[in-house]
Length: 431
Image: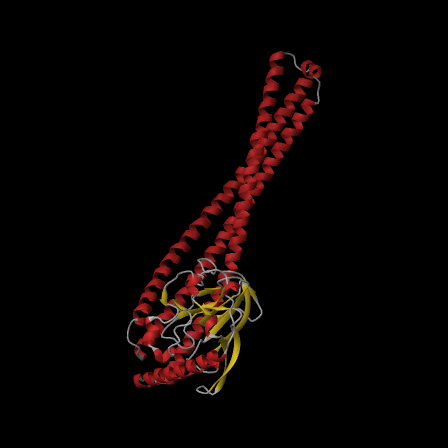
């Protein structure tokens, strides 16, 4: 009877293990089929994404080409039209990325569910193995010996139990690996969900920028009545106002005096600040650059007070370091097309303050704390520009403030960052 009981336990253990594995494999087959279908859909989205990115690249080439051509109403309208097409393609791209992200989340959910079932099946099998081994080991050697008619049967059963003990060790290692895979897939799912939320937010932003581009084109038609000579006059008037306003600002800043302790600033070197854009192409440097020297009517001999980066309409602009938003504004409300346009000013903990100007959309508000690399807005061509770009300035924090400047040429109060000339720093010393 005892011999029969031990064999029954071992047979029962084999049955439980078989059932657990059968359940997992059966579930795995159903899940694997669904996962394969999801992967196929994800690949299709990725193919569409690749095609859309090629279209966007072609539109960007046309925009860049128009930037190199002479300023004209026809060229300006053509550039706005290519920008519209590029922005709409960007929306379609984001929608496809959202679709792919949603499918990825579903795929990861199925894979996580499968791993959880595998872990559950492994636990049941291992628990039954341990229980049977414990029951067997609780019997004395005499009881086990008497339970067998032959010594060969006794040793055969012992070998089986030793084999199951080895199975426990293998099963335990498999369980640990399954848990590691499960944790990795869970982390990937969280990251994908976060990515999905960011894409949805970006989609809303892109639609706002598209609408702003339409409005800009309509305004241009109203201001010029679709006549080249009116466009030329508009450009000349804005240049005259920009020159006069810059002179007013220079005079105002020349009256500001403050001692800047060089030791209060971080040592110059790469990495003190992070680049505000993912792709970097500098179009104008800091100080008395060739453009600034050739265009004294714009800078009044003061040189360029920051660095300009090529950035097409709607490019995400990121904080160069964690800090506090000490000001946001839009100079176009007071005097259109002659200054920074939409701007953001961030004060950092290392006694540096950074300015981001000519934005198409601002995503932060005064008093808000931001992290390094956080999107604070999108590039554009608000204010005085010859085309979409990002203007980036770095100040000694002790000198720069958001100030009210009464402009005689604009006949209004201008709200914008201003600082004594010794507070302007070369951004490239810290990037």
